Amino acid sequence: MGFIDDAKEVAETAGRKVKEGFEDAKDRIGDKVDEVKADAEVKKAEADKDRVEARNDLKEKLRD
Image 1: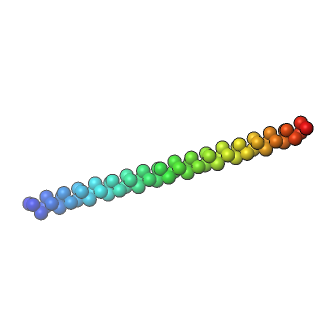
Image 2: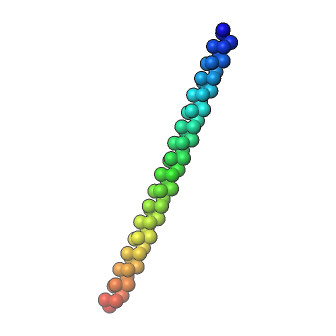
Image 3: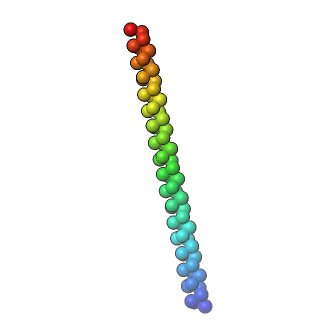
């Protein structure tokens, strides 16, 4: 019976390790998705800033 108990313990440990590996991979992917979303928001904000600056420059030239 000792061999069977050892085999069960090894199988349970392996199962836990696989589950932990999957959860770690899932977390890494989620972190990367969040990073990409944040970068996209920054680029959008920079584009909006550039657009507003260009519009304001044009308005200023028209006033002169």
